Length: 185
Image (cartoon, rainbow, N blue to C red; front, side):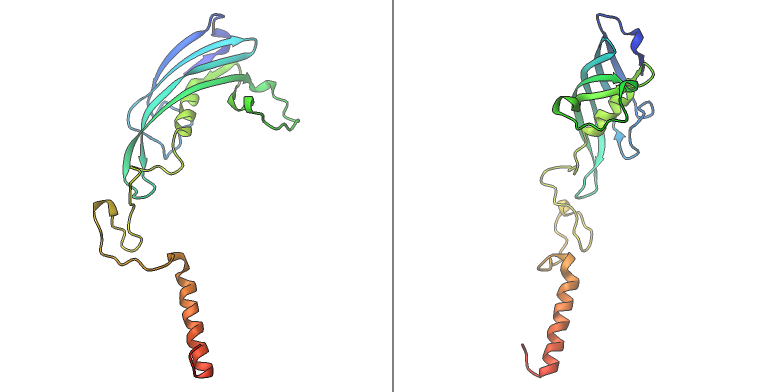
């Protein structure tokens, strides 16, 4: 939903949105909505600054980073932004951001795209390592069986699998050392 800043009355403006995946611009291809995203925003203009507060909620379908199975994940985020016109930026000057400037967004051409704000908040609500449950045991690194469904019978090797090549090389070095002097090291 696009909102013209000039159309926002002095007393403010409240809007409720129900967005599906097709209408949300900026939602990544990997992000799947399990249902519609609900959002409620309150917008107030002071000069050129638009103060936006509200809430975004939706259920996403995520893939577990341990076992790979899909699971529902609820995102419920409070929103609070100070929106400035992108034209007001001094693009030549480099500036270090301070704490209060992290809640700043920009709009362009006198228009705010609320759908993009919803999509952004949904993306930010996704954990870096999504897990279907805290106790997820993942899959066996040898046969690929889901350990949550039971044991697979594979024997775990001692040590880290990524160091197997070094273990093999160490074994070869010991054998060569024994052959050279005829006695074990």
